[in-house]
Length: 150
Image (cartoon, rainbow, N blue to C red; front, side):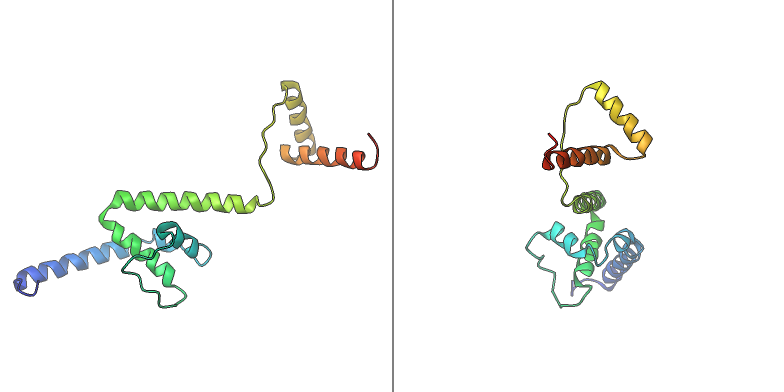
């Protein structure tokens, strides 16, 4: 590169500047990454090994800057960039959902159609969701058993 012509060097610099302007206008990652999810996002992308270009300077926004840099580098491969961002957002949503339901477990039971209709009527008349109605009924039945009512 040192022995390249001035014209070639200027062309390369202009191309780099054009790309920088284009990439710096993309704010999708900037808007999505925050203090709450930056450590998770970094681990999602790099698991437990940092890329060779990453230097941990201990600054508070270090991981966030590294994530933005990753997506800046992926601008050269737009499909991969979009896919990674989409997958990350989906995985983050799933994590948030699981965290919200911490202490709860999904169960699947088979009920006859008439019981399902009755459950629907109970839900409509009490303005409760199915899981709330079932939880209440189970707690009531459990309390009866504990009090020796069965």
